[in-house]
Structure formats: structure tokens, C-alpha cells
Image (cartoon, rainbow, N blue to C red; front, side, top):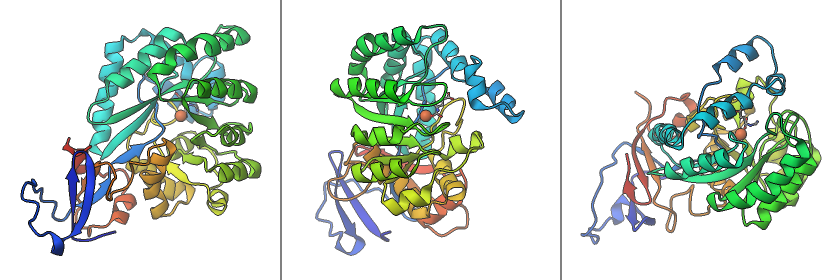
Length: 378
Ligand code: NIG
Ligand code: FE
């Protein structure tokens, strides 16, 4: 952490970090913004979300508290399928409105880049509308849309649907997305199906992510590493082979403490990931079912408290490593050449200005100022 510095921004980039002594007034054309007492962070990056959706899953929450499992609800036609029904019924304008409002809230926490997955349409038309709504919502918050092969639609023949996904839906939707993701799990896609979808996506020029090893151990993390995916996400049930494969390939482990908490799940093997040198990111997994959490600071704090990350790992997880999970080396740091994405925070009342204190306090952190690509957006 640097103290008493000035950050010089020009044309959407950070040009220089100056200690106050060498601010020589040679930059007369500069507009000066006073940030006394504030803590500057790189604009935060939420690298795994399902922000575009309609409807509610409050009934699942109550059912799960009563002891029914996430997979049992899903296989009974609820869970994700409930959100699919509501999302299919919503207009594109409604989806855009909901997404925009949710991003506005995230911006208030200092989040400047958000990955958003489709996956609540399951048919060509609604998946396309979801991706369009996510793209249309890209205001001050930059949106990176991902096509998500989430689950098989109810009542469809498995092989026929898979054919359609590979031959029709993916090629048609690839231009609307920057990445493809597959939920490889019990109640969703098998490992072989996941491989076929990822390979097709890769051939279409998309980046790869995988929902891996969440409910069941499937080998999806090792597959992700083998295919050059940017990230494998969740990882509650990853094994030693999966960890070794991710370490070799440099695949980012995206940890999602919101889903772990809401599903009252076991913890991913963080110590083993750390020991193997796997880069770790932290994201909200914001969605109406398994993680109704849209505050990335909350996810960072929970990653420390429930998963055992250090404060430094949590901070890297919502900045540098989150950028890496999205393939964006310009984001997640502040220095000459980085994007001029900066969030400024006041410490909690009565606390000294330190970055640690922003992680220590659960969920309360709102930004005082936010800059995206050199523009003040909050
Ligand atoms: O990342 N696990 C699968 N997919 C989402 C959950 C989506 C939902 O429950 O609506 C996840 O947790
Ligand atoms: Fe997810």
C-alpha cells in the first residue's frame, strides 16, 4: 500500500503514480481531484455472475432450509428451472432494466467490470435475449457476456438437445458472447458433454470457463485445464489431479463463497490450491438461487472467514486474479499502463484508512468515488 500519492490519468489509462513531493505542477492542464483520507483500489472485477434473470427463488431458500437439497429441487423441476420459466416470460426490456439496476448497485460497491452469464433461457431465443440484455446494460460498468450451457431443458430429448446446442445455438450466439461456460455436474451436463461444448466454443473463438466440481466430483477442473480454460469455478470437490492440472496450466480457481454458504456446502481445498500455486479469484456468483449476493466485498470477507483466504489473497481475488480469470491484463491493478478504473473508499467510521479494514467489515463497503476508463462514473 502506498501513502500520499497522486495518480495521473490520461485517455482512459493510468500514466503515472507520483509521490506528493514530485507533484511539480508541470501538469497544468490537469484537473485535480482531491481524495484526502480515501483509499484507492483498482476498480473491482466480479468475474462470475448470473446477473441477468427474472423472477424469484425465495421458495427454494425456504425449502432448502427445511432440508431439501439443491439437486433434489433442481431434478424436481424447480431451482434453475423456476428461473428459466420467469426469464422466458420477461421481455428483453425487462431483463435489460433488471440487469442495469443490479449493475448500478454493484457500481456503488466499486465494481467496474462484471462477467454475466446466460443460461436461464435454454432455448435459442431466450439465451439470445439474455445476452442482448446483458450487453445493452453495459453502462459505466463494463459487461463481459458469457454463454452458459447451464442445464438440459425439461421435456427435451438429451441427444437431440445437445446436437442443437452444438450445431445451432452455439454458432448463432457466439457473436453475442466473449466466452462459453458449462455447468458440469449431477443434474446438469456430463464430462463428455462438457468437453464437446467447450471444444465447439473454442473453435468459435470463445474463451472458456467451467462450473466444476461443485455438487459432484466429475473431473471438470482437469478438463478445463487441459482445454486451456481461463478459469474453473466452485471447486468444492476438486481432487489432487485437478489441482495439479490447474497449476500446470495456470487456470484460475474462482472461489464462490456465497454459493458455499447458501448451500451450506463443504469448503474447496484452499490450502492445497495455495500450495500448488493455483491463482485464486473470488466472485459473488450472484444469482437468485444458490448465491443471492451481489456485493463483491461481502464475497471477499466470506472468502477469508469461511474458506481461509488471507486478506491479501481476498484482495487479489477481487482484482488482479479476477482480471486474469477474464483474460484482461489491463484490469485489476493501478500503475503506468493499467486501465484508469479506480474505486475510492472511506474507511468505516472511526477506523484508520487501510485496505485490510475494507475486508474486515462485512458487506458495508460503499465507494465514495468510482472512475471507469478515466471517467468519473460515481
Ligand atoms: O453457479 N451451480 C450452478 N449454477 C449456478 C446456480 C444458478 C442457480 O441456482 O440459479 C451457480 O451456483
Ligand atoms: Fe455460477
